[in-house]
Image (cartoon, rainbow, N blue to C red; front, side):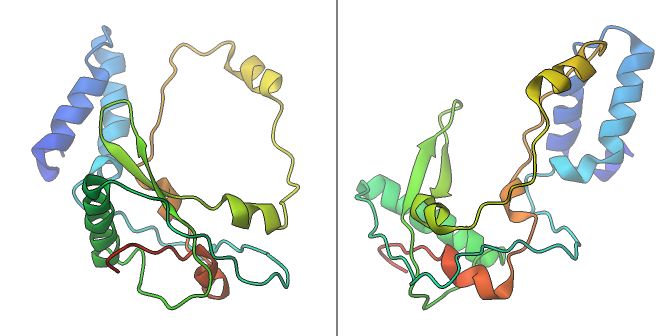
Length: 178
């Protein structure tokens, strides 16, 4: 099964489990990781088959347009490159929407940047979902007996649930060259 994945995934699985001293436990964890190996493949965008869609209820509010933030020439190039990549992957599409939110690049701990869109103004007019979140102390109680903990950073997790077609214009953003 290891041979079915690119070398970067094999190295990633080995690195993530190297610290586990007990060979049997390490192999059990590796089996789980191999079973879901495609989730670690960062070379191709993942596609999730789901019937779920996300709705963004803004009522009858007029479209909001927020001008772009000023960016350095270097950041403009990053934005252009990332936008081209998102279009090529089919994650975003060209639009003539009256809505528009500005792009921000956020520096990550590893020195790379994360492409984000500042939807704060749209969030202000969006009807809030009142679904109750679990209490943090109850979560800690459930974790109290655990032996192993892990941190998961889902690659492009934000793109896994498609938007309702009618709400897509609300997520528009613009760049200097597109």
